[in-house]
Image (cartoon, rainbow, N blue to C red):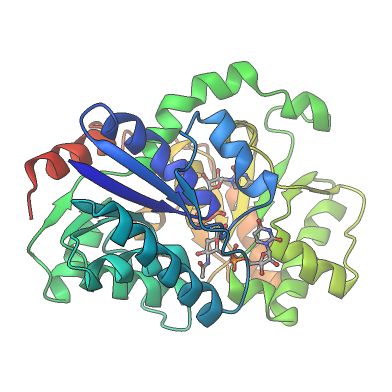
Length: 357
Ligand code: UD1
Ligand code: UDP
């Protein structure tokens, strides 16, 4: 069996690491990096740390408006697929690389396997929502991380080829946590002590491209820092550009740093008192780690995290964010739940090997 895997953005490197490791035991994998993310801190560092094999192709697409980025990626992936003629194309998540990979394959009648199928925010203004809905509808194998995702697909009439496999990000976290705690020196480097700081990440289009939303979030972070808390903020390059435009340099107590590696991030997450984020992956990881989360959005695809209050929605509203952080800090610590006892990566490989649709 020959499988082309398409990845291109930070969370996709992390998601593919456990799957590629298993896949290569029983199939030929051709790894395609679209080049959507290209800074060392957004790409290369994950290949080194997670021992992801070198990509067979780097399409070098880079940044650009949605049409340019998705269109260029589609064109270049099609050339690879015509050359490689795989049995399956595996795509992850909901980025422009995901949609381009799925579309190129589906038009060539190559079965598409979508990892993280069925997620919905029901907000069509999110580029990711468009990407994931489109990708699901042209996929042959739909690998769902949650029961909610399966239900979402059923409601859209998709029942064939749907498999509840668990979450590959859980696999990644599970297999790297001990290593991260042994190897990472990020706490010492930043002068932090365990449970002595908050952690934040912001990169969603709705929060970075709307100056009012970004200002509201930064003002909340400044208020939190000025109340005596330390807030660590690894800044996504997209956000860095907008912060520079806002001339937002924060204040003492708000540590704006470059994006960190996965092992450093996991350690920062685990040792934080609370986390503020608009990232899908970070919401899940911190909830699994038993760290209270405040989500800087009005909705989340990961509705399970809201169920028992471990995650709180606060949008981009300064007062709401501040109040949610106070509530999170006052709440007792949660024990990490065992969300996915069985390896999602193994379940995916089994379905691919069986050619189950
Ligand atoms: C993309 C995904 C988003 C995902 C995120 C993960 C889409 C539509 N969005 O958002 O779903 O959550 O990745 O991080 O696919 N940039 C750099 N260096 C890089 C990469 C990006 O400077 O290595 C800057 C560029 O100015 C670029 C901007 O960040 O224009 C946005 O990058 P892009 O890949 O278009 O979207 P993300 O916001 O990263
Ligand atoms: N992450 C990281 N370094 C950072 C920020 C995030 O390694 O500086 C990891 C994080 O632990 C998670 C993934 O990147 O595994 C989430 O990616 P991101 O927030 O970029 O995208 P999303 O999950 O929102 O699509």
